[in-house]
Image 1: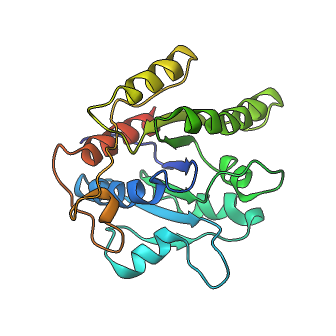
Image 2 (image 1 turned 45 degrees about the vertical axis):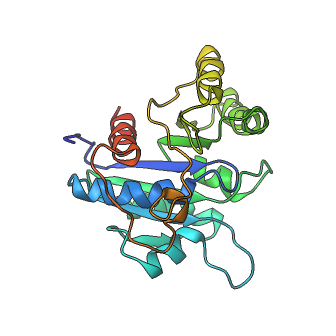
Length: 222
């Protein structure tokens, strides 16, 4: 994976509903980027309950994720903090909580701070309908002339033997959205992605996460 990123680096936000795999994907990407020599860091902008840590922060406390993970500041300081934490020539990834479209919430502060948004989406009709809120928010930013990061969609929780992912990808592509080629399969096996929280991510060459790490880094470098 030889990818040339700009000197000031790139910032990527992961958004989507709760349980769509944002934190799991980020944890694995950090490891694969480290193996590839890409300097990276993460900012956890999840909004957990009282006395809870964001899941990515908690994961980093339990296991080595190969890159530093920082808690996010208040929403008014996210943009400046993100710029300061972005490694020169590297990547900063921002994890977010379940998507809520509400004026003044953390999601919009994050969108203003990044170059690329990655929407994690399970390929079901219900989740596709819910994704409309994310897509509409980005369209609104563009319509009012505000900073609008580029969007890429990654299908998660996929079943390789079912047609749902193909159908969802076709619907999104027809609407003009960028859908990444790599899909993250649902796996609840002992060594699967669904059971990886709190452990050092298994970095398997040519695995879906390895391919996704390269694809997202290339997308960020555009």
